[in-house]
Image 1 (cartoon, rainbow over the protein chains, first blue to last red):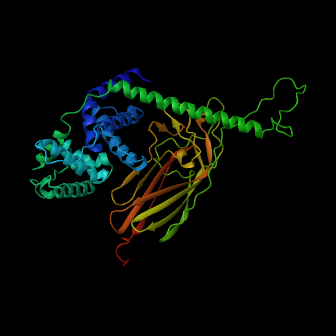
Image 2 (cartoon, rainbow over the protein chains, first blue to last red):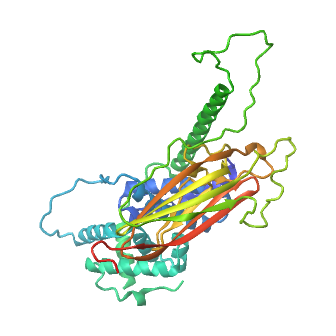
Length: 175
Length: 271
């Protein structure tokens, strides 16, 4: 190991872990899985750290690895059982906690999206990245990103989650 | 507006629980585990290869594979073994699939004409280095053949690779050792044509052996089949693309191929 390089890498990990874990949560919908995803991805990134000189490059590459690893997990891992932090509750009368309901509904809607569509939405709207940068992270073209986002927003609208959103064309940010 | 979705996303992650432990310590622990696992795998398989070579060389000569009787030969006879050669242990699997099946003509990709970056050090590789060691003798070439089939909206592709390559090396030392031939290819990726992009997941940190370090070169000869399956969302014609990079004493060699796959929705009649 190169002590200087490892010190820089440790500093990057400790500094950006919270943000990356949030990104991971929006990709996976589960906090423990998000932490596992971030740590697995950072382990992969460690082996490439010599070619990633700047913190921006490290973070961008880490997000790329996270998106791809999440898709690979989805394909490879047994999905018959999903870990959960809370026991499921039986359906009840509409809760007064509207915010919690909204969040739950959004999580369910996100879970129904294809992985790459979900990643595109999160990168675009949570991370505020332009289409070109999203395309770079996802390893596809900008038009593919736009297509993912358009389909993703349409699906969210079907769940009545985004009634205020205008048509996709006017929400695009040029990369 | 677009802020609405951002706001909803922010609400989702607002009450994040604290991480378990110091993040960097967790990552470094995982790095250590990966490195240990790689070393252990490489060590076990290298030992197995040496033992196999020793048996093949006739160390066990008795009728019941008992050791040869002691003779007056002074000292043990050294057994010189080359780098272990890996062959796939499992036979080629053939899947019977309802629907159209198409076998594409085989393609030969020879290391004699590398298609990589011409500026890469490809010309001095096979020459002996200062230690007197030379790269394992060639030829290094891969033959690829592709079999495609469709079943409704599902596309299946079998990629068969046959030939000899150099095993990639890990950044921290040691070569890749796997019974699956495709694992010995440095890097491969696939595009299914509908935006799905698949990269081989090998934990990164792998490189081709340096041309001036033939001691790190391990020739691997064999054949392997990599089956790929993908279900498309809707019927249509898609362009599948495959790109692979493998190692030779001349440096990395790239190979790419693309072709069309047409899938049909079983619910609607074929055009």
